[in-house]
Amino acid sequence: MPTLQDRIAEIMESSQLSVGKLAEIAEVTSSAATQWKDGPTKSLKTGPASKLAAKTGYSAMWIATGEGPKYLAPSAPTPSNVAEAPALMPSRRVPVVGHVKGGMDGFLEEMQYAVGHGEGFVEYWTKDPEAYALRVKGDSMHPRYRHGEFIVVTPSIEAQPGSDVMVKLKDGRKLLKELNWIRDEEIQLVSLNDSYAPMTISREDVESIQRVGGGVPADAFQENRHH
Image 1: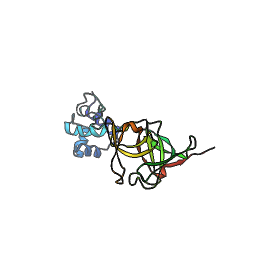
Image 2: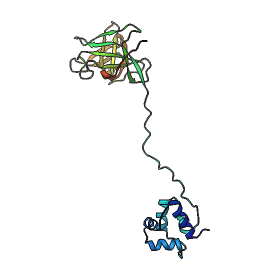
Image 3: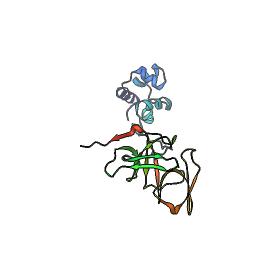
Image 4: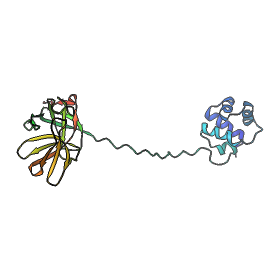
């Protein structure tokens, strides 16, 4: 078993400690530290040994008595009560397929480009492979959506009450509203601003209800690059 002097010598050499620094860490006098190094002291009290252990990586028991494991065991990570953040959904290029403008009667004036002739795309975080974007024209949807911004429609994701939706009626008319509720035979839509009263529509008159995922600022637009 190594003597206290052997142990102190090893600690001082491996940690590059002077007698004064050793005394400072252990919170004892330099005279006491010198006696550890040169004799006649044969063992240390728990307090100074623990302080040296915390700074040097040697175990307090080994420093104090020469027994037990020489080095401190690696501490297990403290369990966290904070859940890991979910991974961010990757963004995708959503094609801009046309523009949309609110009409005087509360219905939309929408123009879609011919397939393959879109003007560009916006980046948007959605898992819907069928997502498409429309450029907002005019101020009829202000303040929800401003002129020049884009709305991203995600038709593969079911709309829930409270969602903004693009509603296409069987007669060809379209609306961009907030879905207020869906009942057995009717749906109710609420205007995006205070311009119009809530609208209740028979479900048999509805061709499709497509969820609006959100808005994208005008500067997010990227033009198609044709080679």
